[in-house]
Amino acid sequence: MAAYTAIDNPELYFQVKAYTGDGNDDRAITFDNTDTSMQPDMCWFKERNSTSSHALYDAVRGVNKDLRPDTTAAEATDPELDSLESFDSNGFTISDDGKV
Image (cartoon, rainbow, N blue to C red):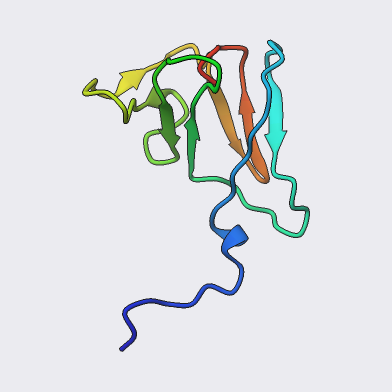
């Protein structure tokens, strides 16, 4: 048995999206590759212009729970959904919070 399985198209399982925030709420971020329709199960955010913590969200915990993988902090709850708002069919929707 092989130790791994060949993946013909890795973009079906992993996408990277760099974008510049514009301060608007309810902003949909979509993946550029129109050949795939991948709903993310995990989103990892990091501001590129500051030293603030990373913010990681996954579909198991939901969009109102974040992890800070670069710290020792525990999972945090965001009851107002002021960061990641939803996992969408081809991307995700964010709010105007600086960490996303």
